[in-house]
Amino acid sequence: MTSKTVTLTDNATGKVIELPVHEGSHGPDCIDIRSLYKELGYFTYDPGFMSTASCSSAVTFIDGSEGTLLYRGYPIEQLAAQSTYLEVCYLLLNGDLPSSDELHDFSRIIKEHSMMHEAVRGFYDGFRHDAHPMAIMVGVVGALSAFYHDATDVHNPEHRKISAHRLISKMPTIAAWSYKYANGQPFMYPQNRLSYTGNFLAMMFGVPTSTYEPDPTFVRALDLILILHADHEQNASTSTVRLSGSSEANPFAAISAGIASLWGPLHGGANEKVVMMLEDIVHSGKTVEEFVARAKDKDDPFRLMGFGHRVYKNYDPRAKIIREMTHKLLAEMGGGEHDPLFEVALKLEKIALEDEYFVERKLYPNVDFYSGIILRAMGIPLNMFTVIFALARTVGWISHWNEMMQDPESRIGRPRQLYTGSKTRDYIAIEDR
Image (cartoon, rainbow, N blue to C red):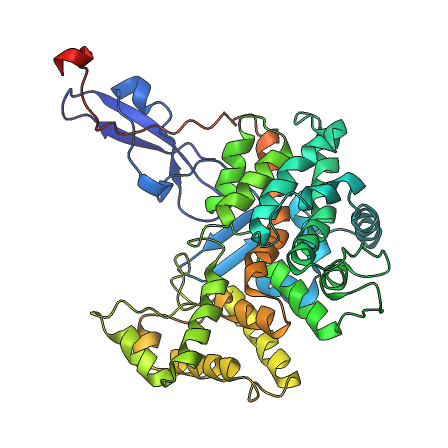
């Protein structure tokens, strides 16, 4: 924070006010407009909150023009190369990297609390057999407060920590069971001998009749995806969690609201769209070049999914990281030559990285492009893609929620509006209308 101010003059009344300017660690300074309505009688108008800081936060920082992503100040490139998802979870929750003992204790707590209350299984029977896994996630996560109401005092730091641990530990079980239910297979219980990511894969693909050992490359690839999606600043779902939590709703309800927001196709469904696009290209019988030509035609509504990013005006730093893992995975599977979809994906990637049209516009492959390919290569069905996104983002959501609950400036969310409806009018009796 600084002592800088901005002076505003109301041309209508001639009144002059000074607004304080706050300076953060990174990024643009923020004008504090809280006194604007009191002093001048004006609200600000900012649809989508594209230029409004709704809170102060020390969790994550993004610089879209520079292609920077920091978790608690640590570059995502360093964390992806040297860390694990559970270590990143500890970092986001607590603000600093753990010592060896701290990480050991944290990992043990998460592993030992991955089982669900047995009665939760009955919730799944209430869904149709073809229910979307995200619908199940919204319902089951929201219902957890009915089972774990012993620690939902949002003002108690110990309760908040317990709830955070429960959500992180149980989310893989909830997610894997949603897959098993949709496929009519027996639910698999978590195993403490496996890693966090390996456990999720075992619960998804294992069956009681045989022993399932997760492929080490799959485990590392999925762990990388979880790290890269763990948090992304004040996006739609994180803002939803904060807004829901601002009413002092319990954390399970707030996270359920975040899952519902993530489900929207403009937010968490981007990697699904990538695979659907690749499938459409394969099944069309047309060449990749024909679809690229359509994408360049401003009069053609067709758009290539998985290229460019709303926030990153440069290269998505997460895409640089996950690209290497994608090629490693495909190489182990034969280089993609046995699957037309992977062949199309590699051709599109090459064009986007070399074609002048894409390079000039910085329409590089983004993280959704590569994560969609990886998840499909692992045999994960399309309707589980956003579920895995929710699994990864849970720690980011709960970290922001916990930060908000400690913030003395936090208030219940109450956005204003520009009212454009009818002015005051008198009621007319129905016989006179």
